[in-house]
Length: 155
Image 1: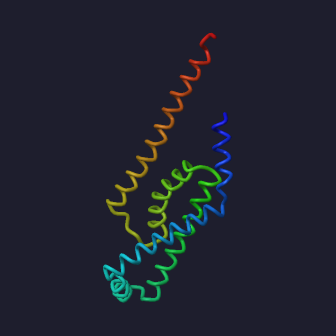
Image 2: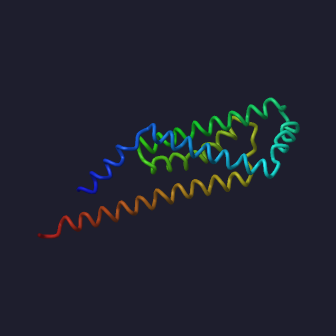
């Protein structure tokens, strides 16, 4: 019981501000790492070339890059909030559900074809999701049987 109180005390020391600071530092250093690698590899010239060849124009290309970066940071903050307020297991379930939902919405709302590769990715994702829940169901049934077995043993 004392171990549980130590864990709860350590969790109280982690505040939202500390978690946001840690996430900011992780994002900053990973961005710096990628920028240095892009400078060494001279990939910034490729970005301007891709922007010129982009079918919707340079302005929309850079807008898509910026909005993608912003939306990913918002997603990371949401993920941290979900872990902080509920559990990492719920975050894993939600992220696993995002893959098929994203594919289905891309077909419904964008002029996107649903080829065999996307069918295979969707089937694999749903299969993994179903097998995860089946494994959890089997574990819960096994635990229920063992707890009932221990409950009926005489003292």
